[in-house]
Length: 468
Ligand code: CU
Image (cartoon, rainbow, N blue to C red; front, side, top):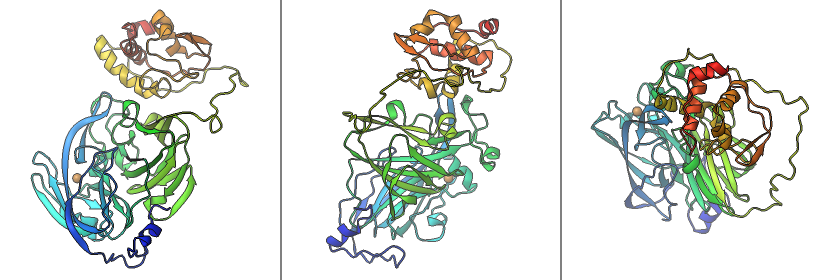
């Protein structure tokens, strides 16, 4: 069954109008209800009524300072209090009475352009709303599909860049095919005065936005919004549908789930279904619907396959799948042996030379080190410091680290390419030479020692300089 289930609709005796022809759905509108709006990554439940109705949508615009990354704050402008905005779920043929309410404590006027609207500006002109005001307009949901909505108040790009986007789903007559789980993911970029990870309250950079050079490319508005404890959850044997939008404002997303194949994709969230897709493009201001079944347990990474965005700009989510493994579908590692055709030379990763060592308190080093960690270390050693089995040793409760501070400093100064034993497990990988400044090394080690049950040792830049 395709997503837009025309066959099922016809069986119910409902007149279905082919997309691209007249979209006057011709359905009688009966009753009225207030839309239940849901914050990401959840979505409202599927629509069960088999008729069009009048739907009242109350959406509030709200500005607030929130977490962009650990130690990094940003002034978000939102629909509903978070990025992306609340998910709206209606049905083809519904008549929507849309209330846009701008909170009295807002500093900016806002409006909304819903791509599901057929009319000038998608509702933008009708919904221009100063702080402390409410605007009402109505529209008829003529076309089924998944649509982006966004603020379109000047400067439009800035309102979008600050987080003012979300998704509205117009279910087709007959509904979507049933699945076990549905989630709401939306990509967007952030342009900050400081570089990725630079701490404090970061103002929006119009210069970087115009250059289309974001510091952050994120799912759901923050580094880690969909990782660790915030990971999406599912079980082996279940089917999952992701409603994925791209708020932009500039970049196209090469949306991919590592270790999964999309069984079905509503490409660009349109009606046509493409099967067996690895990576699907989502334009800025566009969306897609992907569905897949889960055959293997484990953590599946949700990425933009423009991959530096994932490992250096934050575009990383996780789907945690629990259940029994089937070794015929995926065996896990069968053999592990050394293969070094070019020798075990340490790779170098260039890094700009940082400022001269500074006097900092241990607490300041911990906070600064947390940012160094998320930028340089977390991709391998994981945000929770647990590492990855057989690949990257844990830093949490690490006997290797806690036994010898100078050895730890040397690893960061020189890289590491020899076999080591950490907490009883042997690791034979290569740790690249990162070329961090003395301060960054002192800070990140102090952070690691202060975290995850480690010794609490403090490392100073002077100690690092002495070992250099
Ligand atoms: Cu706005």
